[in-house]
Image (cartoon, rainbow, N blue to C red; front, side, top):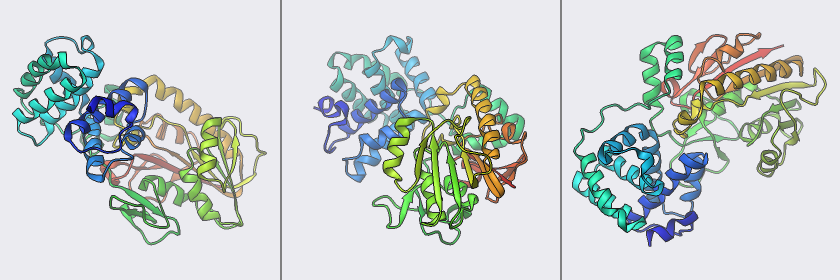
Length: 401
């Protein structure tokens, strides 16, 4: 029954732990093999669940993805063969069970038994294999490390800039579940992490007059300082969270133009934020005359490695060559964005990543200054990060003409 209920997440509720584990295994498998983002897919998979079941599924999904390398190593030890020799659906269920054995609160024997039941529900013939593997996993020492395992190239780059201690702090903080933050749309006193309008919210309905948004992203919107009546451009704007913030700042007398190169993303964002004027265009070739805008926000496409708390799988996907290509695009976008700024105008450059290439490496070629935000001054920008501000990693720099 658990197997049928989890197909394409067409369940209406979860009443037993076995079904929750099966849903979690399906989400993990789709994230690892289809390129889906864990936070988006987990939200979809748990949309109809009671709060307790939703928390259980998300806890298992993100627990597995944050500890994947260690769990896989333990399963391979237990299986005594390569992981790619195991059927993918069985491996996904072994991963969920491995997480519970190595990191969970259940007694080892109970966790092993639950894991065997989970595998049996998907493939009865694999129950014996699962029993043998999970018993061997349960005999291993429980891991002591609490940080994400980061790609070697990223660790080397961060250690060169930050040192070993701060890099390890970042890895540990990136493995911690983020708090749920909302932006109070009419502003307010300094809130979470000292960022105006950012408030930690309890699970449940979103408070009236608020939208869910990480505090670092709220900080980016704050430093744009769009005023009433201003003409504002948001480059690479989809899905529109920061665009809405700019609309709240500029008011009904202002004009906010939101631009993105992806037509489908623009269509989706326009439904969410209809008060912006949406344009499909490439940020390296913006279709506007120079000096057109009082405020420009370039929240540039990036590797996203500052969002590992909510998308831990990104570290498994992004390569060093990807980062170099992105940094080149970011430089070209920033050069064009600066040309669009009117005299006396203000531009904000931000990226939700921590790689030196996309942050100080891009900003250092331009006349930018650190944004007035919490965190750490880094080159001519400001860094917010999970180990510094309990937010996503975000580099923010400002140009004032």
